[in-house]
Structures are given as C-alpha cells and as structure tokens.
Length: 334
Image 1 (tube, rainbow, N blue to C red):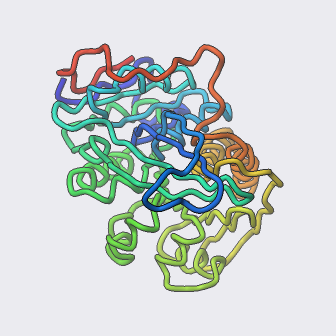
Image 2: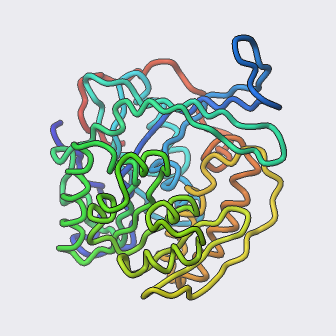
C-alpha cells in the first residue's frame, strides 16, 4: 500500500476521543553498567533488547493510562515489523506501521549508569523511523481523533519534516489540537532553536525537557525558559525530572507540579511516560495542571523499570530477529 490506512471504526471527521501519535518506532538495546566504561576492554553489564522509540513509547503510556483509542503511525524495516506490531498491540495501541523496503528498523543503544542516578546515554541509528514521508499520510487517519501528538524526532530529517507539516495542516483544518515533544537536546542543537520554533508553528502544546527548554531559549533557568517558550506556543509543559514539571502560558509560569519520589533503575522513556499520561489525562477532561501531575506519576513509575514502556502484560511476545510478515507491505493495519 502507498498510504497508511485509516483506523477502522472512527466516528467520522472531527468526532471521537482518539489519540493519534506520529513518531518513531525503535528497537532499544539497553545496557545497564555500574561505574565508568572501561575503554579498550570489557565492562560488565546487564543487556536487554526491548521495543522502544519516543513516539511508540508515548502511545503505549497513553493507552496504559486509560486512553481508549490510541493509534500510532510509524515506519519500520521488514527485519522487525511483526515483532513491533505485536508489542504495540499487546500494550493496547493500534499500530499503522509503514514497512520500509530499503532501511532497517531504527536501533538505539541505551547505555544506562547502574548507579543512583540511572542516567542514560544513547547511540542512535534512526533507520527507517525518520523516513516517514507525506505519502504515508492520509487525512482519514484523523477520523475519530481528538488529539494529534508528534514526536520531535520527526523534525530531524527532510522527509519526516514534510510529513509533520502535512499532518499539522490536516489537524488544523479539522480543529484537532496538536502537541509535540522536542525529543532530543543533542539533535536540537544541530537543528538550531529558531529553525525548530519555525517548524512547530501551529502546535498547541509543547512538552520539552529542562535541557530542551534551556536550549530553545538560551535561558539558564528552566522555569523562565518555559515561560519564554509559551510566548511562541500557547501551552508549554516543561518536564523537570526529579523536580517535577512547570506549566506556562502567555509568558508566565502558571503552576509548578512536584515530582513523585522514585528509586531510578533506568531513566530511559521517563519523559515519554510523562507525555503519554499527560495526553491521556487531557483526553479524559483534565486541565493542564492535573494532567501534569498524572505525567509526574507515570514518569516515576517509568524510571523504576528497564526500558521506555510500561511493564508488558504477561502475554507480550519476546523479540524475534526478523519479521514473519511480507517485506513489501508499505502500510499494513492490524
């Protein structure tokens, strides 16, 4: 198929309470080590392969938090398409995965310090995930959708940037609000703050991390940075890690949400958990402050588990090295 098929059972344009996430689907190899890496030799580590990707993680957390109709548009390689589809379905997400005929599924090596901070460093091969293109989009994907969420990783390649513009324009035409998570301070630095802010025109909610908010504004204070960003985007919810979150509108900080105590094992995906829970709460009718509190609770649960998604149900499948599905499919619905 040349286009992703619309979700079945939608209530028609502009109706429904669904959440459509467009973003990256990634295979994460998580290596938890204690102490510094030993250059040129071995470092003992606990290593697991898990399903990940910022966009996919957000969708899974939103579904786990009770959002009733969560859909995901992403692009994967034939090497792991069937596994990723099964993992998403097991988490309650309806995937619309475009199978790339040339590129493999994106892979991220997540090196996690096994100490108290559980801080992580990523080695990223985006693979097929950033090859989403306008041809993968269909306006019918918005049927029954109340919110559209975009992974900021989509802004880091030309083809997926073009898709973002098409998706935002389609959402605006239907009156569907759009949120975006900047995703990566490292990639943001390469893209440039002004270029990023121009690309997110039309977005209603921005969910940066502390570092991303600082980078986008040049301000050292994260709360001031959130307030400054809210002059460009109507609602900014800046994630502050162990300090909670800041809600800003119209150039002012409107609320400071405390963090929920947690004992970190792996901070991978904590921001995605916050975003997914935040969006699920908004869909349920919560205001930004209450939704941010839900986000903080989900972020605390996320750092206490390995990987970027909720703990899988007992029936979730184990990873397999290759997809059993046809490699020529371009957009196969579940």
